[in-house]
View 1 (spheres, rainbow, N blue to C red):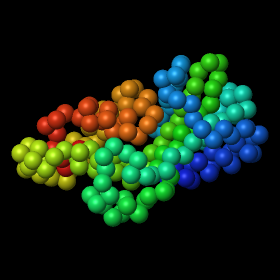
View 2: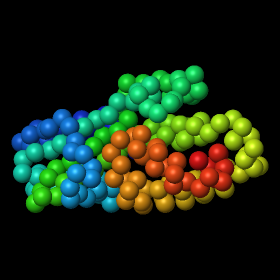
View 3: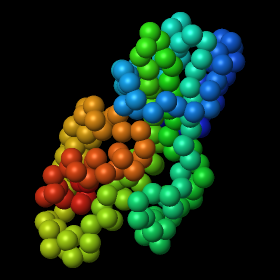
View 4: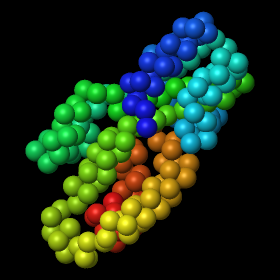
Length: 186
C-alpha cells in the first residue's frame, strides 16, 4: 500500500496539473450528505479524475501526522520501537470534493498506523483482563483468517468508515469487536 505522504503528494501534483485549488483541510463527516469511496472500490487517480470533472475546481486535501501522545491514554513506554520511529510521519490522508450538494471522501491509512490502532486496542485492556480471558494462542493461519474477517466486517460498517477522527475509529472498533476475541486476533 502506498504511504499517505506519497498519496497526498500525488493528489497535490494532480491538482496543480488540472488547475484545481487545493484547500488544506477536509470537511467533517456527518455534516451533511456525503459518500465515502473506499480505495478498494476506486483508486486515488480515479477519484482525482472525478474531482476534476465534478468538483468545481476545488480539492480538499488533509494529511494527519502520527502523534500517539495526542490519542486516548496511550503511553510511549508500551509502544513498539518500530512504531515509535513513526512519530511525526503522515499516517492518514483524506481527499474530498463537493459536487451537487454531496461531499465525496476518499481516505487511506498507512498499514503501520492500522497496526498501531490494533496495539492501542489491545493495550487498553488491563493486564488482569488479558490474563483472565486469554485462551490458547491461535495458529498463524487461524489468526490471519479471523483477523481478516474482523477487519472486513469493520471496514464494511458505514459508521466506522464515517468516523473522521482516529480516536473515534478506535472507540468504534473497541465497541464493535466482540469482547471474547483473542488478543492476538484483535
